[in-house]
Length: 230
Image 1 (cartoon, rainbow, N blue to C red):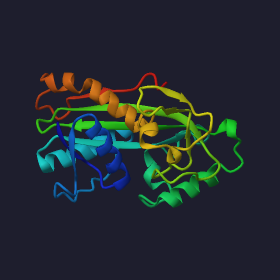
Image 2: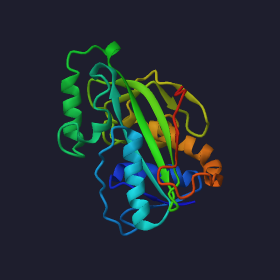
Image 3: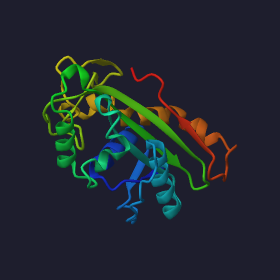
Image 4: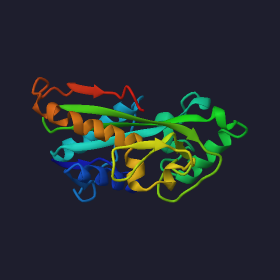
């Protein structure tokens, strides 16, 4: 299937392209599609924000669109930064400042109380108005310092519980305590919140495309959440 990816974030675009192409899809960035949209993310949930972005780009391009909204939810901070992850410091997209604020907020919090999870909601929006969202979750914890250069956002601080085994469908316990940003693409995609959401999308996509029961209904969507992130 041919998608436009509703994002202006180059790191997220690279991951979406890598995962979608591995699944056999083709994907254009907004820039490649000639779109300069930057919809305001006013939703209260990741799913709502993903739908806002996907719908806006799909309606502008009249092409199937995929959008991701994701963030880091830290138990010790009552789920913050959550949907405000990209603008936690007060400015949108300032990764360094966001990481600095997160470390400051967790100063003095011991390792066993730094549990966190990355959450992704991926929305597929079709020109006829049908849409579906697919959720993925990756549990882990927040480290005490940045480590690694392979990721973006909070990746240098997030330590997942498990990592993928490249070339296999297996995962193993992250005994070395490596951060998202220290993992290879294969190790990360197998366990990441975005990788899990898109794997769920791939499993459900054929059935969703064949379901015409919500044809033309702007509010007719399917919300598929992850029950078991293990």
